[in-house]
Amino acid sequence: MHPAPSVIVFTTLSGLGFGLLFFLGLGLPNVTGWVAFTFFVIGFGLSVAGLLASTFHLGRPERAIKAFTQWRSSWLSREGWCAVAALILMGLYSIGAIFFAQRWGLLGFVGALFSILTVFTTSMIYTQLKSIPRWNMNLTPAMFLSFSLAGGALLAGQTALALISLLIAALVQILYWRQGDQALARSGTNIGTATGLGDRGSVRAFEPPHTGTNYLLREFVHVVGRKHAEKLRIIAFSLGFFIPVVLLIMPVNSVATKHFLAAVAVLSHLAGVATSRWLFFAQAEHVVGIYYGKR
Amino acid sequence: MTQLPHSTERKLGLVIDLDTCVGCHACVISCKGWNTENYGAPLSDQDAYGGNPSGTFLNRVHSYEVQPQNGHAQLVHFPKSCLHCEDAPCVTVCPTGASYKRVEDGIVLVNESDCIGCGLCAWSCPYGARELDVAEGVMKKCTLCVDRIYNENLTEVDRVPSCVRTCPAGARHFGDLGDPDSDVSKLVAERGGIDLMPEQGTKPVNKYLPPRPKDTIEDQIDVLAPLLAPIAEEPKGFMGWLDKALEKL
Image (cartoon, rainbow over all chains, first blue to last red):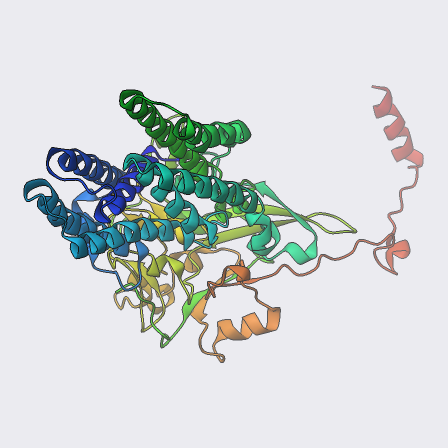
């Protein structure tokens, strides 16, 4: 798949933002006034920036409102509903925390639920696609959810929760890569089934339909970037999980240093997740590539 | 509504004969010609006369080489367009309801005025049947020439999809694959028509007829061959002299 910057930015930022909103909704940390204001600005900023970025890949963004109509069948539509519900609920909840120094617990809990549900619906947009075996796995929502919770806990300053969730996310990431590498072969789709000629002998793409490129090749066949996949996996894993964990367990006495290290951990995690998300798209093989003799 | 209908009254679709297709791409051109000026937005081209031409097509012809265990390789030309699947994943993923499958004939269509161009339907299609038009920003796909097959302004012989009408080899057939007594259904039964990527669970309506096995070339083509062997004898007399004289020139 073509790793479009808009979807990478969208899934990375909104995942982190809704992760933070999830913890804020649960009262972790239980903040009020200016501190709450800062936390909520970061949470809303990240999630809204992500959602806005996602509209950049639309061919007709002016009609985006129509995407709310098909929640019965479409995960993309459900994601839209969950995101709007989460932002409204958390918006109301933040008013209580910022202006009235009150924690409206039930509202926060429901808001947290919708925040994490938004991340789940995002992941299901990818998971539902049988045409992309590397995404069509149970580990895809597990990865999106664990990344969002790890990043959220890190941003919310929940050191113990952040450590546990980072370790879980790291484990899910390794499992996802391991299982993902075998997904295409395991799907049973190959040039034999694609052409229906597989039982007659070995099939080879002899001539493409055209000498130039087309929408399908631009969107679904991305071979060049996979060359450095192994190195990028190491970078993604180090930045996303290893460095943040090391920074979290580092024994520091001064509060200022602790805050500084936490900020570095967040930025490192963000860069790691963005790299991992880039690989998520760049390494995903759409079966249509088989018709062109490419993956 | 982007929920799929439980069943459709008819299952209109194409039957493509891989044995007969000669790979001339006439169906590709006729499809583009008809569909760029009829139903919906035109099929745009980008840099059509420049160094990197590309454009929107609803039908494309691939060519594959099949190498059997023993014997000669075979070249198979392979036209591919929307298969109008019964379980079309492109319909259910659509967030706006622009993508739908018709109850009356099973044709999968896009209502272009509702399409936001998110591309998710093209992502979900394992066959690459949908292409996002760069100029228009909306999804384009085969309509089974819905503006021809019911069009009473056309003579009856023309009320078939443009690709079928054009195919000079007669490799493309159009009909109701839901009716077991239709010509296309009989053809599929007789020739052992197949689904593409059956493991994807899309239940395509369009069927492909596999190529018939190639004739085997034996040492002796025919029992009468020895009797028909060409007789090339050295010319004699005047013709012999002429042959030699001309040879020396």
